Amino acid sequence: TWVGFERPTRGSVSVKGIDPWRDRSGALAHLGYVPQSPALYDGLSVSDHLDLAVQLRPGFDRASASERLDQLGIPLDAGARNLSGGQQSQVALALALGTRASILLLDEPLASLDPLARREFLHVLTDAVRTDGATALLSSHIVTDVEQACDRLIVLGVGRVLLQETVADALASHRIGPAEEASGEVVSTFLGPAGERLALERSTQDGRLRPATLEEVVLGYLASARPVPGRERAA
Image (cartoon, rainbow, N blue to C red; front, side, top):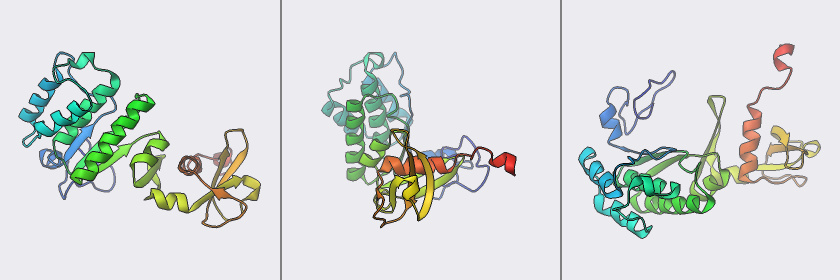
């Protein structure tokens, strides 16, 4: 819906006040996109990809994209097929950042990267966002990466928003511990790493429970959206 490929079934979407469904090219002018699998052409070099971006995207900053890749040690004359997965992702990110778009959409770009490549990718992303002032929307199932790079958290489940607040507030307002110890506003209960039953509670002070990690907050809200066995039959 952001890029105008689908019309929203409910509600509305606008990019800088532009309806992507009615004016796709106008909306795309404000967007940079990094897919889960970098969409590079095997038969082209890195430099060829930058040249193509210049032709297709008016205002593409080839110099800054080249500089970023040079700092990462990625040769511009290298063929796309010869790059590692991490290098391909960095090229895709450089192409998105080179558009100077005010909004960056990153669709699970870290899913297939090793820990070192993920860290390098996030370093380049956060540094660029801080320098250029762009807004980045990063989707990921790797919560530690979200905590490292993002200042706001949105947890999605069963087609709806389960939680939306700053990372700092999410950490400050949730506590966790044995389910039998919880007595406040319990978000959900779920299994801990040792098979114990844990309860996530929305609370800032509860001496019986400890502060929840961000991963535990996410797990708790995902668990809250799961159907309770037998509920449908009881209804």
